Image 1 (cartoon, helix red, strand yellow):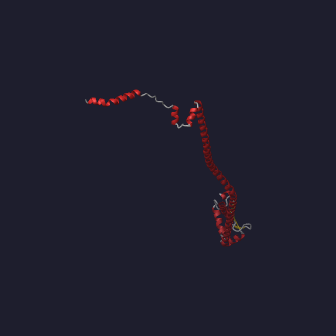
Image 2: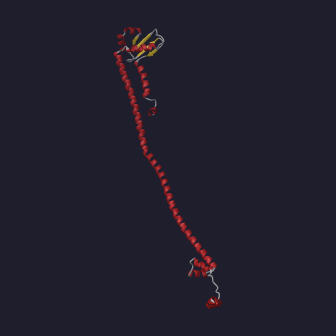
Length: 259
């Protein structure tokens, strides 16, 4: 009973659904063209989209290549300009550093040459001063040598004046150097010294055969034997001493003095 009542209630609803299905007509779905989808995805709508629709693919491809070439040319020109600017700046920096280095080296050489040129007069003055000092040193040594000889002569003269018998000591030294005492012996002296010695030592004067020699200078003495003759005077000994002193004070060459 209850089921029958439900059927009676839903019967009108079912009948309307069946009628609607019978009257419904199927519709076909239309997909948008791929070009329009691509234009919309790339923002080419409106006039741009219409322009692309108006161009054929060949013209479109040509304009696309022209645009690509134009962009390439502009990019190349911009890159070339930027490259020139960067290259110029790099060249300036490199040139500046190289110029500074080269200029410093050349300036150093030029300064050194200027110093050498400026020092040439000083070198000449230094050489002149050195020659003057060398000459002064040479003259000083010569004067010293002359002074020593002069003082020595005066001392010898004074000693012989006070003690003339010192000449006999020189004679004894000379005779002692001989192998044997000679049988005949003569000693020649200055007349004044001969007189003084004869007065002081008359026996030795006779024993050694002292004789006066007018040509003999004070302090001179010659010993003459039957086989030899010896100069034992003061001048001979003084000359030997002065030769040794001169070889020490006065070099043979000026180069030795400079060294």
